[in-house]
Image (cartoon, one colour):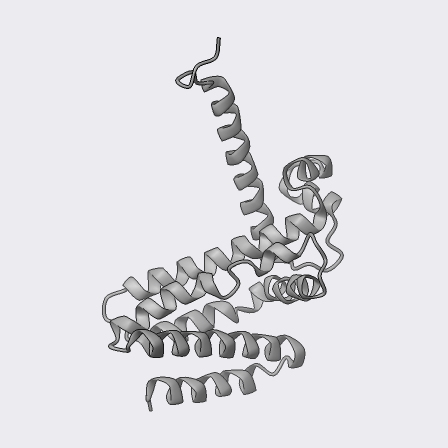
Length: 202
């Protein structure tokens, strides 16, 4: 008879292995998209590039769009990790952190990743069910570290939240501008002007 204390170590080990394998495949997929973009991306092509069959990708992620959503979410987590590491660097003022993060986000090698972000967000806003999960945490996941930085710099909670949201919206708007126009110099100048207004820097 099964009791509340019975466990299934073999089943738990299998589930853990499945999660680990899924995470490995997702990391490889994110790296591939970051390096090669999303032009003509197919599950067969992606699978071949990262060493698995397209059926294996379907097994772990369900569909191409569900995989793309997970790639976007994983890419966003990576960007937040970069922000967290920069915030911990000794001697870096908040404006310096912002400039370094902007440089990372606008690295030409990551353009495909940014295009994918806006493409999947567009699908989600049109109500495509498989894409909708990308909207979860799209703003709130970023607000926590950004608000913490503002509070640490002396802003009150309400002001910190408003400033964090403004900063996030500005960065995303300028990223879309860069993708749409290709005007790197113009977008960089606009970001510098925003930082001057935002931080009061010269």
